[in-house]
Length: 302
Image (cartoon, rainbow, N blue to C red):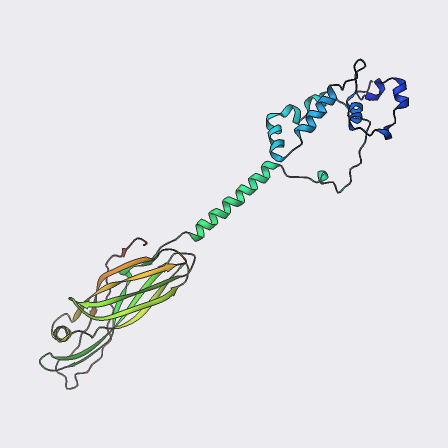
């Protein structure tokens, strides 16, 4: 069976074979001519040498050039003409094990895909954790109870009183970072203000709901309102007081713009005093909580 392996040097004249010394090939073109073969007539390189030159050129240069030849110059890049010749050279090159070409390299498209995936994941995570979420103070959840009531009155419904209210304010922080809340709520009866409670840069942990419990003294009304309160808490049924809560809270998270929530709701508290004409008119009673069911008003961020 005839071997398909050929040696270009066998086609040269005997004199050329005798005078040719492989160790004296100082010109790279001599090696390429020997590898590609020469014609017997004109001595020009054959088609194998041309294919080799095109193959080397298509795989040289930067990555963009190699990528362009791989997809748009497939004939030279994959060297089909050179492969069809089924040519084998008698030359052998020793490559050291440290040569980077011996290491298995990932294809370029896989590297680009990994970079795109990592970049997309990083952007998605940053947007997910750093996007501003609401810090809500829902006025419908504010609970108001009578902590203590103390009357010191005469028979004509004049006198003084002390009314302490306990107010629970839940604050919902939906962000992944702590928030601070500041603000105040005034306690009104009709158009008269009788007390106030203040939150001053209180911290709310991330992804939690924190309830602030404040004590407010609603006893700073003028004499006309004081008489009305004493009469309602003694002889006028059902011995309840309806206060209006007005104010606002401002919340802050990181470097985002502040969010302001307006509070404008009411609450009904029990102030029942059993006996009107007691020799010792001072009396303290604990009462059950009655809270508002008004809906919240949330302002957009400013």
